[in-house]
Image (cartoon, rainbow, N blue to C red; front, side, top):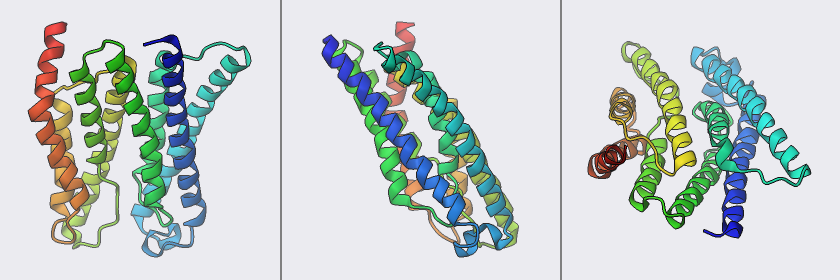
Length: 260
């Protein structure tokens, strides 16, 4: 890959992550501000413990994400002002960490959640991942590992359940809340680790523990809510992630082991 093309892909990755942050940040900030008294069951003033937890996580996520992204943007600004090349790959871990910090808030359903806007934000993050995959394929990296890593990451990220209020009978509600919060607090950081490795090396980790945890935690949220509502989105992507891992992830894992 020529230096000009490397410069273009470097800029595209920065733009993708930046737009993800800006769009999701604005959507989540408006959610916190506008949902205090509005949103019916999801209003902060509804007295529901779920909302207190969801808004607390969202507020902390906004604060942490902002702090981390501001540090990144300061470094980026300094490089640009000094007319130096800011290499995304050298800071990929920082970008992934900041993205995951903000993603915690994105996994909390509030009274002013705009799902379409959130998907647009995630779309830019996925676009940056696609750019990294294309970059790797044209730079002599293992094409199979790059493509499989990309698809696995996208499927895995979509299998993480958003935390919703459940109106099921009280005996199961506590288990459901525990399952969905456990899924978010384990799978979101797991996604961050997978994302960081992919953005740095063009390949992610295919360790057994991650898809197993995804299948158990995301599967539990779907199963516990089944009598009330079937979460087809999480169900489909959980199954798709598991099947894809068995069909292609295990092969990728063996290839990586042989290279080690």
